[in-house]
Image (cartoon, rainbow over all chains, first blue to last red; front, side, top):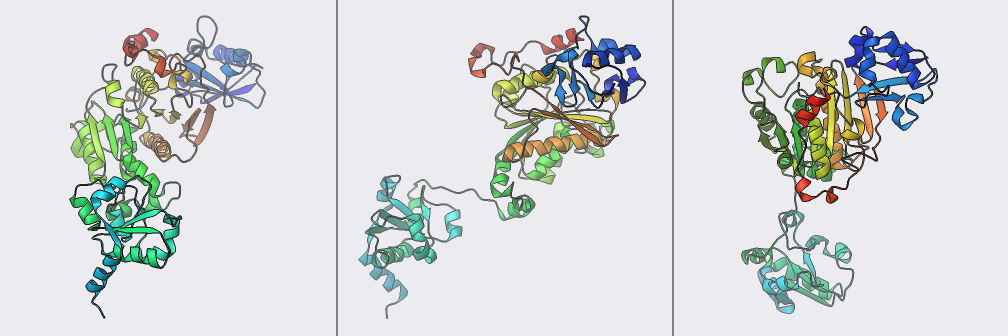
Length: 92
Length: 392
């Protein structure tokens, strides 16, 4: 069980929530749980190969899970996952 | 008793005077050249390499300037009188072996057309304008001079670019380049504070220039009323010390990253959406580049821009000023810049989150030594528009 912070571009896919709780003991399990609960997020998080899309970064607390153990990185109950897709809003 | 002028004539007859032409030959030749004029005179210009010891402080300060009394010393003042008197003192009272006075002083030296050093100073108006910077130890006089010498390129005079350009102008950044091909629209004014209602319909670069010049005439504004693309980016960004990225699309962001890494120019980057902002500093080869963070852009449906999605008007102000702060830190060399870190600001929660950004050892751009890139590859970029369209 961990808290997942949802970025603005994914919020419409999770009913507008900014944080959701998801079950699982690894990054992969938690994101899979998120995708099961909110199917619209699946294609945005995962590519066809089941790996994270390269334009989405996921952080366990402040560390990129790619420099940890990727989707198999263990997650404790007090941890927060941050989903960070690239944003380009600027000049507006 | 003799008159003052008679006394000086007498002194001059007792010392050796040298012509400026001879002094010119002796520059950088092991001879100590000492300017004995007042501080303000010295500050207005002096002989190259001259040391400064005002005649009034001669006895107390000459040892710091010329510790070796056997060294040959040439003194000068404005016209040759004060230096003659000082030479006499140094020879008779202070025990120097060889002290001469330059004939005609600084005035004759300049009349002969010899080179002078003019130390850079702030004008009285600048000292007043930047007084609150000068009072901050981390900025001070040196930092203010760095700001005045700095060249910063703002990509966009929109939501982020408006506060950035205004505050950098106020801070005295000497050259501010602005790249924007847009004109001011009424819907911009909710957040783009550099523009005015009267400026609706005018090019943003002109509107921004007018505001900057009105705020601080020290600033040289360089306008680029165009969009950055592969054909012009190298030419535009070369020579700038820092680039501030307020661009609203991925093709330009990747193009900018690659060009800035090749030219080794740090980019202070921010992005905003809704109530959230992201901020980081990409300093080539010191930390990760944008491609280390996001190797590929997202598909179009996941890459909305502000124009389509709306933005809280104050948010670009907040993020833009965080960018401007990072720019100033980079210029004055103080503090811990946001290199290798990404700051997320959530305005609704009033929370910030900091994430680590690692340099990718296999990054196709910043893991390559720019010097090893062949000349014909420099400035060449793939077609990013097509690249991003394909990604979408």
